[in-house]
Length: 348
Ligand SMILES: NC(=O)c1ccc[n+]([C@@H]2O[C@H](COP(=O)([O-])OP(=O)(O)OC[C@H]3O[C@@H](n4cnc5c(N)ncnc54)[C@H](O)[C@@H]3O)[C@@H](O)[C@H]2O)c1
Image 1 (cartoon, rainbow, N blue to C red):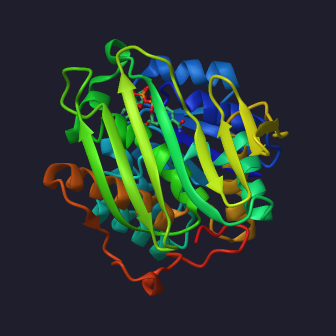
Image 2: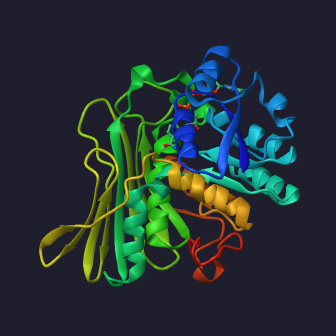
C-alpha cells in the first residue's frame, strides 16, 4: 500500500482524494495546509488520519511514501524539491514551475534521490483523451496531418484567487489552462515541438496576467498544430480537440458535452470511452504504477518541462512577434524523449 500526503487542501485536492479512493493500492494518510479548517474538512470527508500545518512537518513523516503538491504555482518548485530531497515521490500539479531552471532543479532532485516525479497534466488521463489517443495510435485514421486544441471558457475573474490573476505568481490563463491545451496537442502530435509563434494578451479583464492565447506550434515530425486558450468574460466554453488525419477526422472533448467522434464519409460516429468514477483516477493509477513498476510516468518531469518550454517560448514570441525556436533547435535528429520511457508511456 502506497501512503500519500497531500500538501495543500484547496479546491482541487478533492479530485485527488476521490481518485485515490478508487484505487486499492494507495491511500491518503496525511494532509498539510497552513489553515486548520481546510485540513479538518479533508480529514473528515475522506477519513484521513494525520494532519500537519506545514509541508516541512509532513515531510518528516516516515510513513509517507509519496506526496501530491497541490497549491499555488509559485510554490511548486520549492515544495517539489523539498519533497524529493525528503525521499518522497512527487505528483506536482500543473503548471510544473515558473521557469525552465526550476523545472531542471526538480528533475535533478528526482534523479539525485531516485524518486519519481510526475506532473499532474490531468487532461492527459481523461477517459475521452485515452480513447482518442488509442484511436490515433491504432492507425485506423492513417497518418496525422494537423490538430487544433481549445480551452476557451469563462475565466471566472471574480472568484479567481489573486495568485491566479498574477503572472508573477505563475497565474494567467496560459500557464493555468493553456498548459492543458499544449499537453493534449503535443501528445496527439506525438512529437517534440521545435518552434512556437503566438499571440498572447489580456483582452477581456483588467489583471496582471494574460487571459487569452493562440499559439502555432511546429513539431519535429514536420507537422504543426494550434493551441487556443481563452478565458473570456462571457461566451460558450469549448474544450475540444480536433485531429485531422489522412483517412479520417477525430474530435474529442471531456467537458460540457463529452464525446469521442470519428468523422469518415461526411458522417460523425460516436466512439466509446470510459467514464471513471473520479476524473483523476488514471492520473493516480499512472503515478502509482510508475512507482511500483519503476517506470517513468507518462507525464514525467522531462515531458512536463517540455510543455513549459513551449508555454514560455509562446510568451516570448508574443512579446517579440517572432517565431521562437526551442532549445533543441530545428533539426529533427535532435529529438529526444527526455528520459527512458517505455513504448506504452512514450511521447515521441
Ligand atoms: N489538474 C487540474 O485539472 C487542476 C484544476 C484546478 C487546479 N489545479 C491546480 O492545482 C493547484 C492548486 O489549486 P487549488 O485551486 O486547489 O488551490 P487553492 O488556492 O484552492 O488551495 C491551495 C491550498 O494550499 C494551502 N497552502 C498555501 N500555501 C501553503 C503552504 N506553504 N503549505 C501548505 N499549504 C499551503 C492554502 O491554504 C490552500 O488551502 C494549482 O497548481 C492549480 O493550477 C489543477
